[in-house]
Amino acid sequence: MLLEKELGLTENSYYEASVRRPPDSPPLQGRAVADVCVVGAGYSGLSAALELALHGYSVVLLEARRIGWGASGRNGGQVIVGFAAEGTIEAQLPAADARRAWDISVEGLHLLRSRIADNGIDCDYQPGYLTLAVSARKARALEKWVAHVDGHYGYALRWIGPERIGEWIASRRFVAGAYDPDSGHLHPLKFCFGLADAARAAGVRVHEHSPVKRIARGAQPVVKTPEGEVDCRFVVLAGNVYLNEYGDTVAPEIGGRIMPVGTYMVATEAMDRERSDALIRGRAAASDTNFVLDYFRPSADHRLLFGAGDSYSAATPRKLVDKMRRQMLGVFPQLDDLEIEYAWGGFVDITMNRAPDFGRSGANVYYLQGFSGHGLALTGMAGKLVAEAIRGQAERFDLFARIGHLPFPGGALMRTPALVLGMLYFRLRDLLG
Image (cartoon, rainbow, N blue to C red; front, side, top):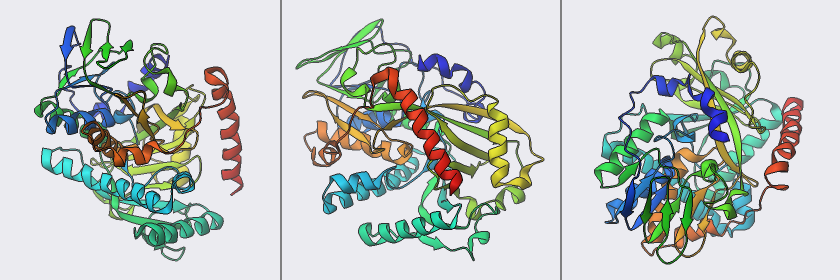
């Protein structure tokens, strides 16, 4: 089970070590009645619950473990515009609709910042994001993409050529880059807790340690947990890779369209402010453009937070800290004297085509999944769009629901080995430049 595989990975998380968790909400017991039952207390579930409550709907939110226990509490903290696969969206949707989808992602950046401001969420938000190329070929591709998003979407990025890249990052690994002042980074678990506080303040009833075992479908769905049930008019499924964790009884029709991918991070010991500031101009977040990418950023307390690679085998890499340290020093060899104080990881969800997967299962069960590494900003908009759809304004939600998705081949037994082989291919491509 994914939850069991992850237990050891969550024990040395910098994010968990740098927050004080509020007391857990009680599990659901007995019968509850609500307009909407939301399943999953990560960003998308919390966002949907908050939006619906602000518009007068009664909402019960069920979480199998604790708020932010999954990817929402362990990710790289990078708040990024766009999608993991703009090309997929452009291939499937008319140009005007692809532009609307992009604009929704931009709105997601602004929604996140407004929620931070409106709800007083202290989550160390820092603007600025660098996309970096490690070779001349990748630099040409990145420059072409910068021109594309400017020409097609009216979204201006600052191109950084080889002659200027040293002014932006203290690393010889990169030959060029692009700077986005509108994207940024934050402490993901603090942000998640802030969303939960805002949802509770709006009237959402939150129940942790309440895994959903089954949904009785119909005009009035009943969502069943081990000790209770929720009678409702609508259901929002926002559990991602954990939705069918306890068996294919919740939504088996959508589980095969996403794949759990392990991601891992380390945090160095704290540096002095001057040394931390010298690594990346403006304390921006950064990632390279490799298929199996490195991503990194400074923390508010002057550590380097570094993530590298993915595991498609659902198994933690051997000697994880040593491996991650080597990756980090490949980017910043000047940090060789620093100890790694934290190392953690967990599973995120990807779709076959890397595009987000939003839709309906029947008339009154909605689902949000497949953020594919671009979830921090897009999850907020996903929650807003599903709330609009439940309120009868489904145009923007249906824009994403039109994106086609295929299940991973071979079912649960074959999709992992097939993707492991695929990842070996892409790693080889990255190494060959």
